[in-house]
Image 1 (spheres, rainbow over the protein chains, first blue to last red):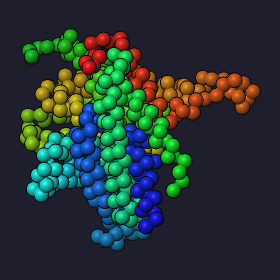
Image 2 (image 1 turned 30 degrees about the vertical axis):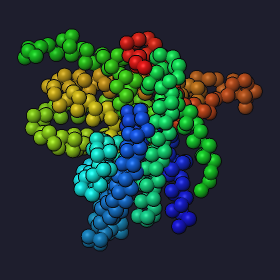
Image 3 (image 1 turned 90 degrees about the vertical axis):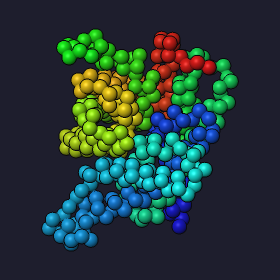
Image 4 (image 1 turned 90 degrees about the horizontal axis):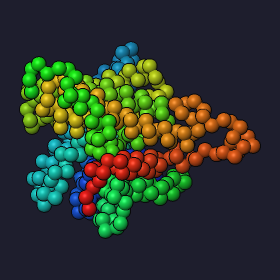
Length: 210
Length: 217
């Protein structure tokens, strides 16, 4: 339990998707003009990450990793005579899972929560090509979490980290519109610099040892 | 478009040279920031990353342009993703085989070329509506535009953060404080926030030289 809480806090603050790894910057920059739209995108990211990371975890542990197909035939296992290592297929399978999950989530949300659907609308399909989603799955694979619970918590935590970052920058951008910024820095340039400053602030969490 | 258009007509040259500055994928089109920033601590990984993107982008552009009339519109994103993912797997395997340490340094970011917005952006905006040769040039041009920014950022960060360029020591050892000198590397440059600020400054300089790119209030 304590372990799960650690992963959760760590994935939100210390290993923040935006500030520590720059994942999902494209949509972060494009959609953060107002708080309302970024709220929608943030929720959608939490949602999709919370689903795809555990699914990819199962895929990684029962199909892709070296000797994972032991349940099919003991000879494919790590000690068997025909050990199989399919991990080179992980990119294509992960992205396929993400694309289909996004479609699925879109259909489910459309059926059961039409209000949420109309507010998320355009963002859901865009999420399939958001680096943060694929990045979540790849980090899960690299860090080798021990159980599906840990993977799920990591997915949701990273989503919340992205959510916090995008809401924060949107709020700042709404205010900064009235400030007197040097013309060439207006818009994109100042957003980069603000994100950099926010990232420095977030680095304060780095000393925490969990 | 006439059939006999020469391979390097003015229009085709534009496809290569426009993305270098006026239509740069990173600072103007805002595509592909995700991977651009994370690999720029040192110049070597940045260079390898540029090469990988160059290969994937130009080949994917040609392939998608070849099959553009066969793809049903509804499933085009999945088709594009499959093409890109296949190419990225190839690149990843090659990197693992020949430059293993750099491949370890790039870690997940090679895989993240799949979701690099430059790829989807150029495939959607260009390759789906143009012939293979112009698409190929467009891919090369955009990959170079991406690479230029990567190399500038990596140059600044490596020079100030580690005192070297491309792995070669520039600052003499005797200058460092620990050897009785006066100089110290700026540790902040190695950390991730400085990548953002460096790109911000590059955008500033770029836009003050190209006034027509300045955003309206």
